[in-house]
Image (cartoon, rainbow, N blue to C red; front, side, top):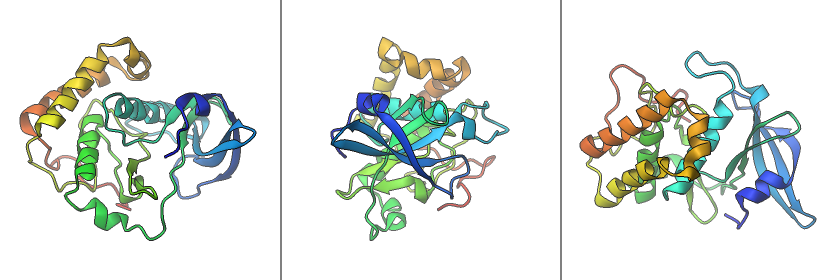
Length: 235
């Protein structure tokens, strides 16, 4: 990933160049012009293009995308490309740095391995209560670095984890992972998490803390018997 910053994507001119037609909500491809010689490819998801969902508040998905980035960045998961909430040609929305993926990358095979980076993503998804971790939302860049995208349906107060990453179910967390969860709770008490907390309800913040406590005690969760374990389609 380049040395592009949050400020660059926040402040540059956002230009829309096309639309990703497979997405369920309006998902636009474009660039942020940082300087006359630097332009960053981005995905832009305007709030105005979000389809209503029965279980998530209207207009909240873009903010949840940003929350996923902020939590990932704050405590060292480093799994979400730079994502900001800003204005654009179709109104305010989430703008995320685009990740180029090599065509020969076999994401499905990699994602089913017992890799350290995949384990970190599985833990991250359990923390944020990700209800849509498909293989298509798992990205390996040209250097092999792992990223995740499409975090709009996250942080719900009810348990809604749906993922293709169940290979760690029942495993206890190691000392590094336990410390990482402690760091999330510490971060929530800091002023630096204020924008994160303001985008979520008090119930959602309380549920986040409860999930962290449960993960520390029980380890990686098993698939729910009351909720589909894998999103459809899984790719």
